[in-house]
Length: 193
Image (cartoon, rainbow, N blue to C red; front, side, top):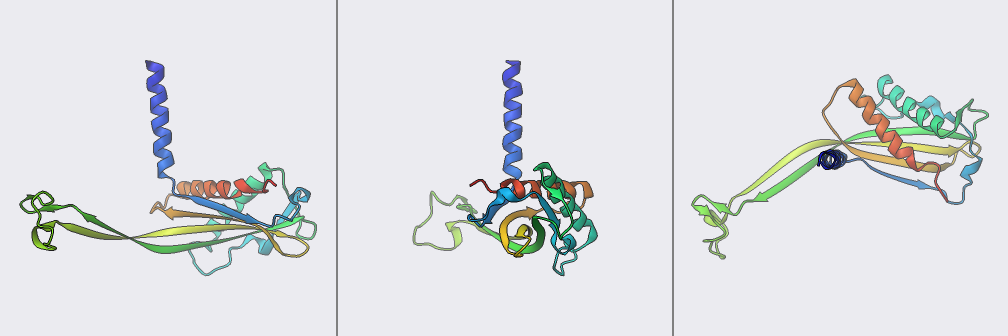
């Protein structure tokens, strides 16, 4: 019985944690390219994020993203080298967009009890029910990692991660979220033929 309770707790925890993640990842690549010849990499434009959004284009975020990418590529056996001798180049882009979520809930209640039971079908207002509409603004972050052929400077692989951003300003949490996003994005690199 104790073993079953432990298993149930772990299963519940995995379900709850899995339901919290909103990160969606996809990748696109050139299927004709031979990814097996890639061994060394370098940063295109020194790894600086192009753009004018100060929430992304600052040294703290740049260092976190670069560190996560370099750690992930090193774990896959790729070696960082000089730009002149690298087999491929790495670049990244980031964006934060505001979105609006509008929800309408029709309760089917009237001020006199359950409106659905005694409601006149031809009556569209008044006792027919109560409707509530709420609007919430939230932010969505997009992180793109590009892999380019060194000789042609041509895009050969692109991974994209999109996630709803929380309001957490804790540096450890931000670092953990960036690491998780980069791990998920680069999980599909190199592509398996």
